[in-house]
Length: 484
Image 1: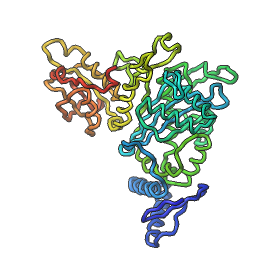
Image 2: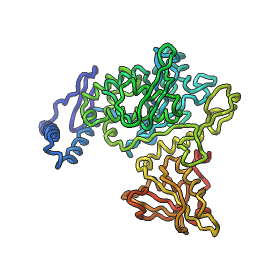
Image 3: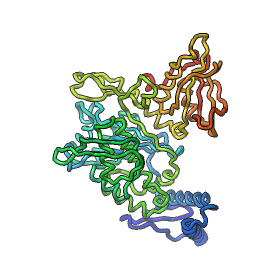
Image 4: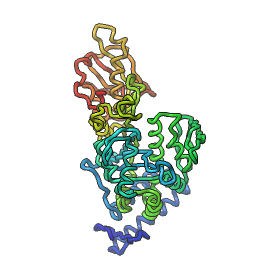
């Protein structure tokens, strides 16, 4: 097949052996060759340090231009939802060598906003209790296994059916899926030369699953580690020394590290390398994305600004500094579901598929990524003067901090203002205008006044002071997930 526009004509053979520039008008062909020579010459000089002090920015721009040309001419535009996002299901499972090998071990939704350059990861816990795709009830980790065996071990049909279940839970339509077993996971990371992970805390797990129903010890120290495939798998799967929330965050760390290693300029600017990576990738991963679509998405890959990580979880909601975004599940009494499971906050034994709040949260973090990319730290101060002792009460600031934390806004701290304020005010400390973040904050409370201010050189980027109008201007209509 071939892809072409008015400037350049590319073709690739059906067996994916090569990409080549075909005959083009002489003037335009000369232009392409000239650019190629400049790029090659620039790379050589840059490597020797000759251009680094002067032309680094210029070469980066030329490189981005080259990637766009390759992506637009040799690739196919990836599928998007009706709001312009590219969404994918990432599923990890044990495989044939493991007991219960097709139970889902890791379930993750990934969404790219091509315009803003943000990627949101949203994990679904494997113990979520659901109405299963083929009927009956049980944990979601068994749903993929049921589909897999129902479709006579057809991974493609099972993946398609499971993606529909994740859409039902999150409200986010899914175009692509990536399914990988433990052996494939180890193999692919080893072929990448390992991945670097910043381990946030020491892990010492004496009950990591070993061969023949045995246990082994998995230990890793805090700090940056270059992980092999085997170590990365243990880091992702270890369950007994940390929470499920932390486990999902570790899994997302690894996916992010793999993507960052794949999406280097050296790779995305070279169709041949992308072809080789795709061949290795599809050797261990079941996916419905084509090589043409991957090349077509390279123009977006170079513009990714931030990866944001979230999980549906059961966690503490009674203190803002212990709360987490996505705390929309609870542990029901064992007798209610005859199993140790997690269910949505709205669910009852008669209606386990109560996903409205979960949809509301996914809507927030998937389709409003601007504030996640800005990611400013926010200090919240109580500046209410009601003629009482309110200035000595941090509860007002803490309640607002709870709502912000649940939205994924990064709260720095809470406290009391030294003076009262008549109007609720945001003070901007820094060079950004933080428009997206301020707009998200206004979903919670009215903020009549925004001003620039230097609070401290090392202070938070935004300071919200709740003024005397706060008690009368608190919004009554909050996003649904904030009502729990």
